[in-house]
Length: 473
Image 1 (cartoon, rainbow, N blue to C red):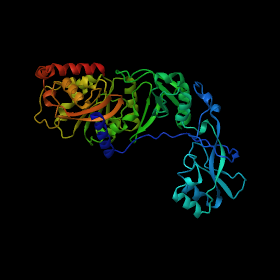
Image 2: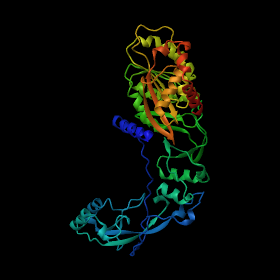
Image 3: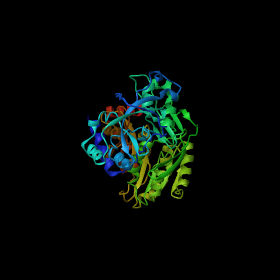
Image 4: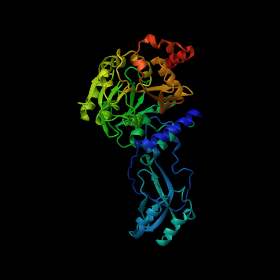
């Protein structure tokens, strides 16, 4: 319950502060040829009931989904047609590629038939008071006729097709992450025999999708990419995406990109001001670094993956911020103990804020110990210490406490009451992605490991929890 309440609270807060960057998935629309007519009603529980022979299909046969159904219709004079359609917009049939207005069965040029949803208008008395009043005002008789409508594969939604094909009583998926022209799916084992059909359906029903892939392994924590299999379409993995007004290009098969982190990228970047310095330890292709540079920040961005490093440089040029971003191809620890260590002394003397972003949730907490004794000489003023934004996964019942304890363990310094924790997203059942934000303590930055030993070794149970959590991530 606590986990659920926290998610709802954070979700509401985020929506108040940020504009949603959600991507809208649209369905394909193919116009249907005008079929014949009928006069007797047949009301089905569902508008479309798939033929039983499509169940278990593994190779897509679009013709097998064709079916003729009967739907109610109103005969409307053409002089008031547009007004009637507008008044009945909640009651007309809504189907991909299906025309709501068709020729009159008597082939009269003065009348048309307006097709209605049989579930909303099973009889003339089903019209709402407002609709009935409008029809009377336009002198349209509330007398239903019935029209034989041919539904084809093109008129079906992706979930309808998959629900008809996949085994009953098992999960049906039509959801995916969109990365440019690529639809990325995570199919379950029972769906794998149908993987190519599923890929084809997703590509057919979503304009702009020309490649569908399925993840075949967990994310490699070293380079943050994963093996994938092409289910349908072209094998072009170089994607072009736009997030929060910034354009990125990259090879999706060799780098990490998650469109579900758009809001989180925006949240952190909004904390950065012109003239600030940002150290992006695990920069990927630049979703934190490039927006920060566009705001006028000075950015040092690093990634161990050579492909991510190459596309990071490419995206800096693409967005014309290469003069504000220094790029590095180093291990995160080497980046902290190299470029970060060299730049910090002069930055600590200034007034502009310093941010350290560590978005490698499977391992980032383990890198916090690289800040221990990073600098040897304490400055006269310690008011401009870096702000760290460190991400982590947690399977704990109380993930806020868990990530703070593990961050404290790695730093060798207690962060309780000296940090804030932000819920980012739920990545799997009982697995959350969290961001812990804190000012890097001067006791850590200017201390040797010996001075921090007491906390890192006590209590023993907390150290054990830290080690176990790190191993499981």
